[in-house]
Length: 131
Figure (cartoon, rainbow, N blue to C red):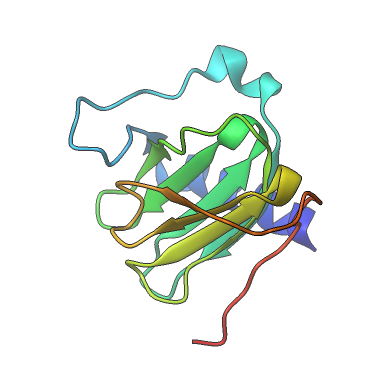
């Protein structure tokens, strides 16, 4: 099911003409290097009711689709570990989890990510919130 969700996100991106623009860091946009895309795996996707979509993957990759601009942005996680799960209970606040007990948190739609202590060394493969 997760695999089909990721494929659906990628197909939607191509059909809508969306492109990878850049990170929401206030700095100049980074473009997604399609030549190196085969080095990355996408592990989880979190669509929001607003139309925005979050995707996480290998080597700390966090990507966000902004429905308003129809562009993908690469978020700066500053982590080299694989990220396996993503959840945004509201548009501004979200969590990603991953390798070696990694937990990252944002309160500003991914402009900055902060680490939270998980107290465990095992991989975390999923995260979700009721509200």
